[in-house]
Image (cartoon, rainbow, N blue to C red; front, side, top):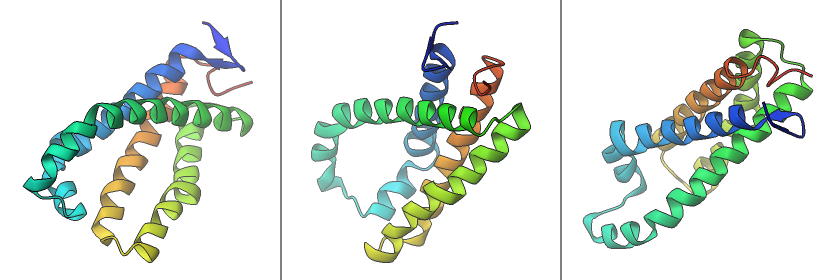
Length: 144
């Protein structure tokens, strides 16, 4: 498998795509109305949102690939040696960095707590999925 900086490129791309797809499932299918309501978007906002959708989706896709790469590097640096270890580290990293950073929006931007729950569930699911894929697709994706 081709590697960049020791990471399996294919495993990293697939993990990033999977994270993006988890977001599409959460925000496009399962919880679209809840998400729109929590942000306070109305029908009047639709034209502006539709105009920005292509750029937003494209940049979100790139961010998902970055997430997968950083998670892969981190799991490798932490010497995660298998599925259970990779999942545990992914959850730990999510709890230590992702959800805590997202919590600032609740504290300072006065966003609804339910938005934190929804976004947190999305990123936790995505991190676990990425850890699984990085481990399954290349037995050495998260090892030295």
